[in-house]
View 1 (cartoon, rainbow, N blue to C red):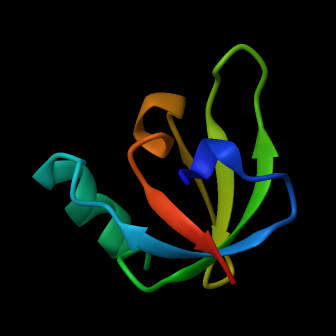
View 2 (view 1 turned 180 degrees about the vertical axis):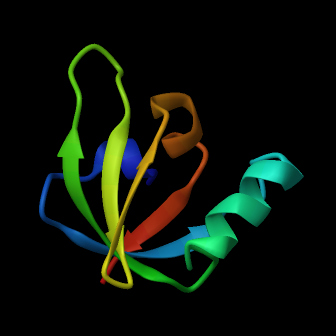
Length: 75
C-alpha cells in the first residue's frame, strides 16, 4: 500500500522509496524519512493535494504524486 491509501492518524513503516528520483530521496533522507522509518499521516489535502507527515517529530509535506510512490506497511 502507499501513503495515499492510509487514513489520517495511522502509523506506518516505510517499506520502499525506490520509485522516487534521487534528488527527492536525498531531500527526504535529510528530514529523516528513509526505508524503515516510522511516520504518521497528519493531514491530506483535497483534490490530490499534498500530504503532511510526521517523522521524528518533524512535519513534512509532500506532493500527492510523490506520496503515491512511497510504499508503506502499518506499524
